[in-house]
Length: 496
Figure 1: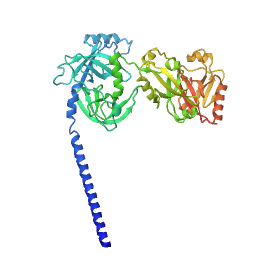
Figure 2: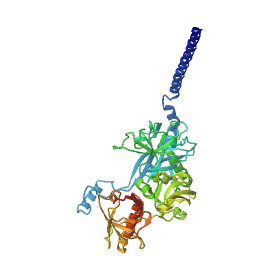
Figure 3: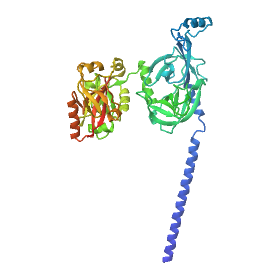
Figure 4: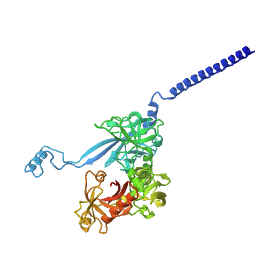
């Protein structure tokens, strides 16, 4: 009886093992089949995609009239007795260097609508007297170059919008969502590199959210070959959507070394829409000067962690009218958490002029919410006036604190610094070059107007703020410093 039971058990085990082997074989076959299907789904060539999108890519030629030279560089110094002789010599030999001449430049662009709107870089068409568009050859394409007019341009993002009048509808491409582009995704760059005409190069997205030098920079970095003449051309994803406008390269020799930058389409779309509607940009304006919050600043203010944007000044404008103050830390703007100053500037700029938004700030150890109606940045920039900065004369009394020699403002110092007659604070006369204050950029001529987020007018005020911070157990102290009228916060560590 026991032997029979054992044989039944062994038989069942054999069936189970057989089923497992069969299931494993099925999974292996399914995996191999999926690999084959995936390989077949991948394009063997980029040619079909290139053929589909090429008709919307254009070459751009610009002509600029350059005034002739009237000097004699490298020949004789100005005022030399030989100057007239050499001018007469040039005239006899038909030297035309002094006559106006035309200069040509090449670039790229792409059509975004069948009625002839074209996107390119602003630097491609800047100061051009004449702009000619050459279309990709093919059926249904214009057979000759067409003149283009400038609809609008934006220097901050280096984007320009052009318009041509064609006899029929033009082939065009659409923008994609650049935020979905991942590092490693395949991309195609198209344009007119080095005047070679319509050219295609392929690569991958090398990096995202690159910043070069502009306020609203959001570049996609790619290793697809981009050279001079590619400027203004499109960067396509594998769906044939434009996710960037090729703008700049990093190169020691002027040629491609695999580090190119394309302005992200999500930035370009907003600019193009405004240029198309208004002929200019209309960016939101909050009306504050801001700086990033560092770890020592966060500690000095009582914030749990660095983040947000610290307001260093509130000139006349929307923020001042709403009640925001210098020393506030903007934590949230229009329902979106503020990571740093760059993020806030971009978000404000992309918000509609006249919109009322909720701004959450950190003030006096807690959060407060303000409703701000945004103005227009372009109007504010036109109204701004700078203030010169000069070195101050020694004041009547001074003291060395926190590595700085400081003194109260006097009428003489106010005059030399170009400050208002009622300006208050402490002027920095000198610094210890080994001090933290010097390392963090403070210099002679700076004016300290607030310490610990309280106004200071005398040396006693500064000493009191330092003592209060030490008694409160603070490791650092926050100073509001102005230079040439421009404010910024600096956190200095407190040492015994």
